[in-house]
Image (cartoon, rainbow, N blue to C red; front, side):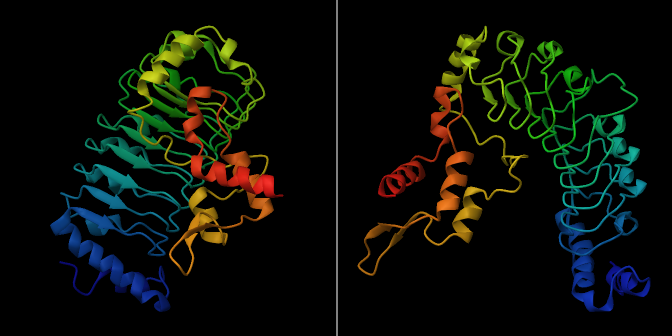
Length: 341
């Protein structure tokens, strides 16, 4: 339907260099396939402008993926995609999301992580079916200056980690359906008592902050059964917090059915970037077990610096029933290497 193409048009208008024609072809292919699959994959296309005007005829588009481009803004035309369910804007240069996002009445997943967002307007929370909102790794200091009521907000999973939040936004505690909240790697010093309003909250990540005390209301008045609170100055004696026993019971009941959450652990603010376990396996010769020429498994040595990093990053959480989060084979290997040294 777009013969002669949008990719060629990008080259003519100077939006894409002629040496990047392969990316123009990928754009044309995504446009053509969207009529059949109702999904458009525009990842890694070196786009500086989102070609939403080319999608105006594709009213049945359900998935739109602009991951890893150079978009500085999202055109208001996104509001015309009424059947859109998934919008991926991660790893771009966006500073703001358009208010027209509220017109995407079927939107369930919005990923705007790894951008330059410095504000988040109330319109972002208005899609009636929105369940997962990820604005992690941005520059947010607050959610909105308008602070409209979020009593009708449908968001269940909200990722705010790796921003510049100094306090827990008051908007968050008004979300009635919230079950998972990530506030890790910010500048939080206090968890407000108002979080008792989040009666449906089940999972909370507050790692890498400056929190001195965990309020008992989190354990007593919410449905919390999973909490990550490492690397805070006030979490060493958390077992003494009122309500911890009730939390522990809920935690034990959920251990067997637990899924992986959060999907990506935030890096330490004080130590900068640290390799995740798969990254460490890729960059370090000798991670994991390998087979020798006779087919027998033999352990490999880890670099001493990586040993310290892995033992720090994968240390057990302060709650003793979370010990299973530590990779047990890797922990045994680290212990063996320490003994040898």
